Image 1 (cartoon, helix red, strand yellow):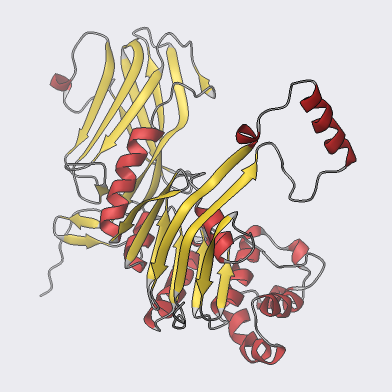
Image 2 (tube, rainbow, N blue to C red; image 1 turned 90 degrees about the vertical axis):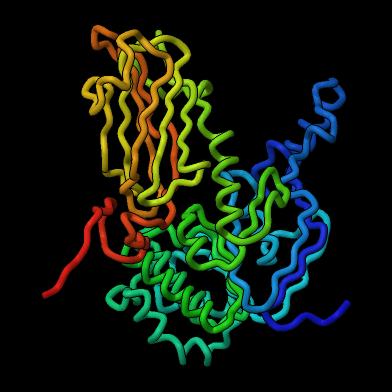
Length: 409
């Protein structure tokens, strides 16, 4: 095989299966072995095909040096399994991976940390795990601590750290080992907003230096801003591979089709004579929502209901907008009869880029609560234009983008 250039990745036919019901990676103990044997003798055991779950099937792709690839997909699609295989944490059931260059990984908060050691000691431990010599770690120690912002706690055992502090230190080490290949799994969504922006900025620096970066994230604006390519994983297979804008749009359309059915939700309140069965959120000509773009929210019920209301929450759980048919802005848009489908249309969605969720409620004509579903669905708002002004997630603060213009005399 041709020798790969530094920073290149080649994956061929990657597959991974897990045994259903087994929660430990170790070999079964005597009790488990005897129980399984007696179950098979009694005819209660399942066939081999049903005992295995394929997390990945026939994944193949190439990554060129300097490419920044975003990997997206719904929960359980196989994204994290793929990154663990690329990071050599998990062995594939089939297929092979070829990589060239130093690899830096940040898959979980605090991966490689020892709880009883201090932050200082864990910097050297984590650096060694990631392939740094003690001399290299020592040379970069001050920069790592400064980036993490944990100088005051660097000699405190990490068992006393919060998850955010774990993240700060873990990311600081991984980002300073000068990797030719950096693999990041969803950690850009953890921590406070200021540190998230700092992490994104550091990844941007690595990208500018020509490093190869693979990112798994549900923050679609981040994928679009940082990546020059995106891969969508669905049911353990590559479902789309191409420019981020195209792949993100396809992901959102697939997400809409599969994620808004609510018939199986049991964590709901109300009498239940009418229940929310489906929610469809679409933008202009498709499922992708952008700042400043038109938005249509359809809420379907399995029986007639008199009123519908929903509230939009941001990623921190703060309400950013509430909508209620009991006080519609356009009374003519509603019939006086009870309805089983409610549609709310917005000419311009003034939310800044990010992820949001909806709480939805239905009430009867006498005001009795029929159904209330918290976190009924989530949706992502992508960067767009608000009356000609670019809405970029890293600029400014808040969740709402007000149309405005500046003049100077």
